[in-house]
Length: 314
Image 1: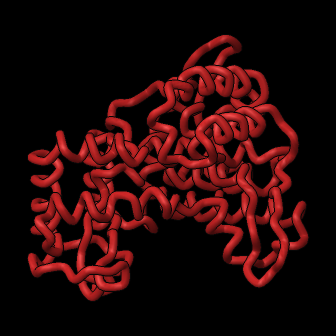
Image 2: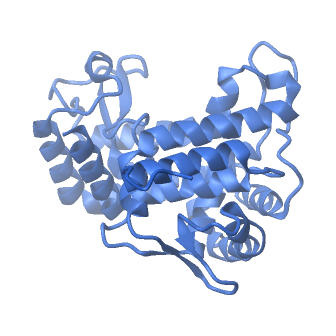
Image 3: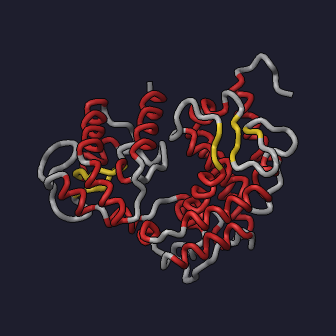
């Protein structure tokens, strides 16, 4: 039993760690629910107490989008369908991917995600939400038939506080689960990128529109951008390593040397102010670019993640 004199956040962190280590996993759905709660924690308002299952279901679709597609390990002349079981949610995501012609950029032009997420939410109610914690609820309370989870006090703050650590724990356990069932891809860095990376095709599709929006100048230095992918980089303003936030508002184009200078660290506050002004003043055009490319456009979530990231950095 955890010592009651410990920081409640550390007690919760230990319980999540035990859950990852000791719980039985016949699919990866428990990992996905934990990962979704962590991601939503840094996007939702501070006073959030309930999370709709529909919202969680849509995140499941995004999480599994890459994972249900074939994976080709480096230096191997094979194409694998990663074995994660034949459960219904995966089949729903596979069908959704097929309906979008396998390209996430098409997803925004299909009015199907709501109907698919309703079906995913029904599966969450039946197979995932009741089973994640077992009888010892500590993350959320939920009664059969409810359409939302009620977070226990302090959970949102703890998931924010330990976001990076929890994501590494969850992704590592998730990857090992897949490796045990797919011996061909054990110890492959490419597998983790396949499971949890971002859609390069989508990112590349916004390069030219963002360069035009920036009048051909590096977002940070203001110098004229040279043409070519190697000369200029598409940068996640809030680094991908901190928050896997692929909303268009989090993307800028900059010179390669400037991008490498900061790598995975937060930019100085003056650039944050410049970035936030860009997102506010150019919101109509950014929204158009997002719609054309299929990327998210969620300025509230982007702003919330920035607040969290800079507050966490002190």
